[in-house]
Image (cartoon, rainbow, N blue to C red; front, top):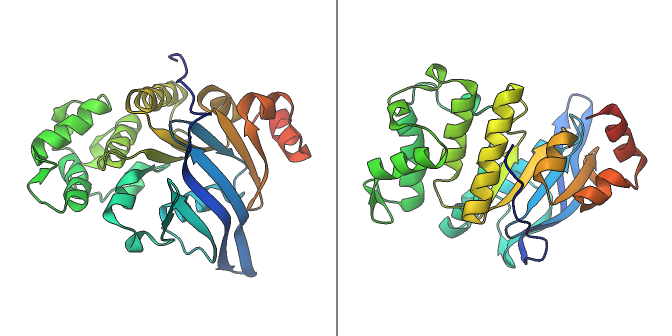
Length: 266
């Protein structure tokens, strides 16, 4: 792996969430997937959210993106209120945050080529089918591929014709289409082989450094957390049990659940 990025510990808050609650109707009644979560992601930093499967990490990510209904709480970007539903957010607010999914193959339309997968967000965010900020769409898609280390030769391919690592790179490229300030990465490397995981982690670190991005990195793997993150928040049953500097949390965890995660090697 390459050397870790510069931190954003002293930067102002980019994304702030306060007292978020998300509930679902489950087979056995109401499920409190996210319960009173408050957190901040500072400009240029990496905040990791860690916990076991079912802890509410991915639901939290989707709540921040406005992809699931939030029943209580507030969000803000650089101090400005943000609508809890993506469709109610301004174009500028939607541009500021991109998302990388665990399985981008499943997130893509299997009938779309890579070119169409990338052109759609470019055209949507620009509200112009021909250009993005004055750049021809074909040049913009090529630039996105170059940013994630892919050749334009993949443009006519469909998701099933790509390797897992290539699909994840296309997913990152798509998330970069709006030139975001924050990337939310939901288990972005967990479905990949170990060697490919390292490549994608290095890519994210390089992008974070070069573009001054903030990352909200959701994972169950504490070894990844110790490499990529500045700060970490530990989730359990929809709540953040503790949060702080990554080395402090890993070296001196305050909560028994965090100590259990560390002991289990998660």
